[in-house]
Image (tube, rainbow, N blue to C red; front, top):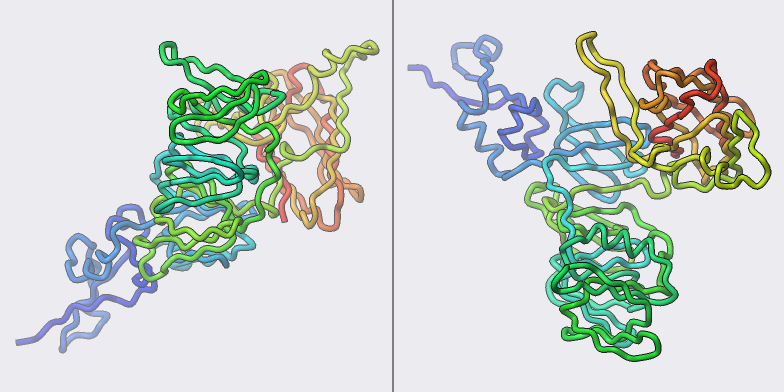
Length: 466
């Protein structure tokens, strides 16, 4: 009687600990070879799915859940796969079974962003915002003298930091987004105490001087008078003399499901058990943290590698209307001024993409970053150091595309890089231009074939990168 043995075909991704359910997503292919003493390997090979191969499952069930990520590189490439390794020097991603290679290594220098699949949106709740942009979810907060004490789901016990690092403290859950925006929009002459009315739930804002913050009350000096305010009434505190100091220098910024935004200088995960791993982090302020990898929503590596034009201040900005304006018409002049990260109507930037078939409508895509420009607009930017590429999608505002037609030219102080027509009804134009050796970037949006009718150009994702 012949004896048979079951042996898995060698496969590099086995060491990544991928879960069997990834088979349905196209990330796993596996073969089982039935070996007989009387038959060759090639005669007895049969492909069997995971669900019917109990022996194969033993290799993979050691991992409870795989981390599916979308990786974006500086070159604009997007790679989707299973996170197999992650350190300060880069990541390794397991690729679908039909890819040319089973995995891909991306160095830290090329990384722009990691975004995790199937994660809920970051929570909005009580938190501390520091002047360097760090956001820490809190369970409790006190500040006396020059020290602030925090308890947080990110660590056990209490941690302290200098009170001068505080910018804003949020103490409630409800209405948090609008409250934060309101605090940002205020132009106070002192610190701000946001107090929530018990019956109506409305927020009142008082400007004065914030003193000690304890479990029971907040000491507040208002109009020269010291007023102890019950802690239960306080929605938020904002410190007037502690405005943003510029983002902390970090390898990447992590966003977590708890709403934390962390500037990380060093990190490492256990490559042998990545799905169960706790990231070892060092923050820009020197704090060491352990964070479950499953809590990460996004890792942003763009600092110093990429800059959006909408975040840069142009050294020259000129809008010239088709009909000259009278001297002193400043309000009208603002009508045609460039818009940052929004359209001329104040809504999100959009582009219309042609339908795949004649029976389908055009596809409207929404973008978070970019510029809205009217003809004739001239912009000149001084480029951050070592920026070598400019990329964007150029198209007319879908609301006016039927009439619009502009000429766009892009140049440096050395040469013309691109010039062409952007027409309504046409597909958006992808621009990928090299800036090697350039120190300035010039953009000109000029009148096209239809005078200035509908000339509202959207340059979405307009950015320079290393």
